[in-house]
Image (cartoon, rainbow, N blue to C red; front, side):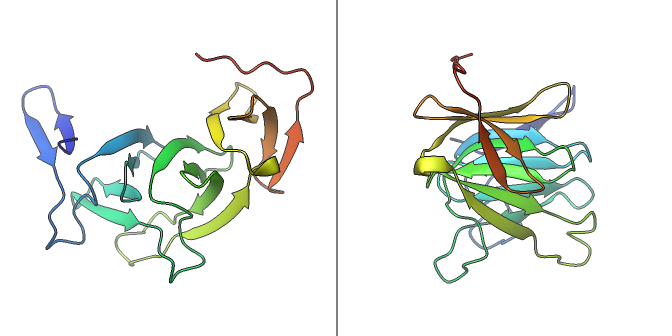
Length: 168
């Protein structure tokens, strides 16, 4: 609730929202953190969307839902994050949809806009969890107890019959 704290072994650096700086953290209430294979830190907030930290500049790219932007993030409450086997990010928002985000390596240098594809879960269920196994298969659990194998290249869900969703 008080921003994001980074500890380097000696000191803390605290990142907080600065309303006058659009490259600061979008919210001080953090739900999720994820470091992708490129070393980028993804910060999911409780109410202000997603942020990506640029280690070179110390700035954040804000990715938020807006009713005016139909190709943007589907919701601002970030529930779950996982990387796809091909390096894109899967982000589950409060509206129950999955956002598949492609972000180029030079996103800060060139002010690159992320490409976001939004996919609804089967039966419009909310996401309960996302994970990858050692074979690079992406699994998604639904709040209704269902388990799906997700193919991020085809945006398709395959129901796993008789699967049991565990809470750990």
